[in-house]
Length: 365
Ligand code: NDP
Ligand code: ZN
Image (cartoon, rainbow, N blue to C red; front, side, top):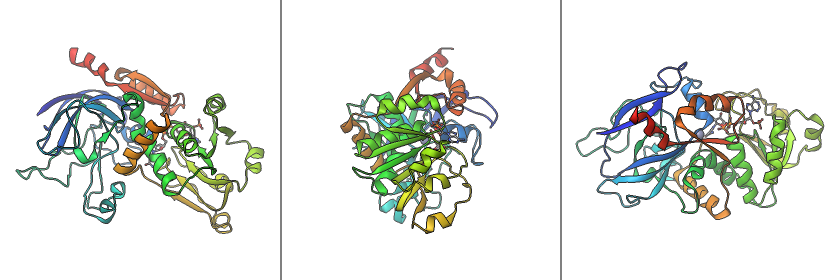
C-alpha cells in the first residue's frame, strides 16, 4: 500500500479538507505518479456539490493531473521513472466495445463505461494476477492528491516544451474543446464562435485560432473584453442584440461552454446553413431548441464528451507545436475552497492550477 494524502469533500455541503488514504501499489501494467500539479475544472465543483446526482463521498476531485513517474510495473514499456506525464478524465475503459476498439474510449459502451479518474466505480477491465480488481476500492480518488496510480495506456506524455503547470488544464479543458473541433472539421479560414469565456473557452479560442480559424468569443463579462483583445479574437457581449443580429448566419462552428442550463437558440441563429453548434458545457437538459430554425437551414445542435486518449496526446502535442496553453493562476491547495467560489463567481483568469508541493504542509502538521 502507498500512503497518500489529498483534499476531499465528505458531503455535498462540506468544504474540501485533507484526507489521508491508501492507494494500491502499481500492478504490472501500471505507473505510480507523484502529482506535481492539478487543474481545477468547473466539473470538479459540479461533482463535489453533487450537481449531477451521482457523487460518491468522500469525493477527491482532480482530472487535470501532471506529475513525475516514481515507479513502474514490470510490464510497463511506455513510461519510465522520472518522466513528466499526465492523467486526464479517464483511467481505464472496457477496451472491448466498438468505441474502445475504434479508439473512442471516452464513448465506451462497456457495462461500466469508462473509469473516471475520480468518482468512478473501481471496476477495471484488467484484473491483477490474483484476480482482484486492480483499483480495489469503491470510488476512485483524483489528482488533488500526492500520488496516483494509473494503467500505462491511460497515461499521457507531456511534451518537454510545455511547463507542467501549463500542461495540466490541457488534459481536460484542452481536449474537451479540441476533440469536437477536430470531429466537426474546423479548418483554416472558418469562423468559429466560442460561447462562455472561462477555462474551456480560453482553450477553445486559442486552439481554434491556432487551427487558422477566425474566432469570436461570446461573453457575459465586460471585463473579459481586454483579455479577448489580447488573444487577438473578437468579442461580443451575449446580451448585445444588435451585434447578434449583425452576425446572423455567419459561423461555421460554435461551441458552448456555459456550465448550466441555457438557451442556445440565439446562437443557432448565428450558424451558417448545414453547420453545427456543439454544447460541451451543460451536461444536463437545455432550454428547448426551436427546430423550425434548425430545420429550415439543416443546422445541427450536438454534444461532445471530453476526448479520447489519442486526442488528448494530440492536443498536448498541438499546444507544444503552436506554443499555446491556458492562462493559469497557480495556487496552494489550502486555497481550494476560495478558488471554487471564485470559479463560480467568474473571477478566475482562466484556470486555477494547484501546486501539489503545498500538500507537504499537511504532512508536516
Ligand atoms: P468556467 O467556470 O471556467 O467557465 C464557464 C464560463 O461560462 C464562465 O467563465 C462564464 O464566461 C460563462 N458562464 C458562467 N455562467 C454562465 C451563465 N449562467 N450564463 C452564461 N454564461 C455563463 O468553467 P469550465 O470552462 O471549467 O467548464 C465549463 C463547463 O464545461 C462546466 O459545466 C463543466 O462541467 C463542463 N465540462 C464538460 C466537459 C465535457 O466533456 N463535455 C468536460 C469538461 C468540462 P463569461 O464570463 O465569458 O460569460
Ligand atoms: Zn474537466
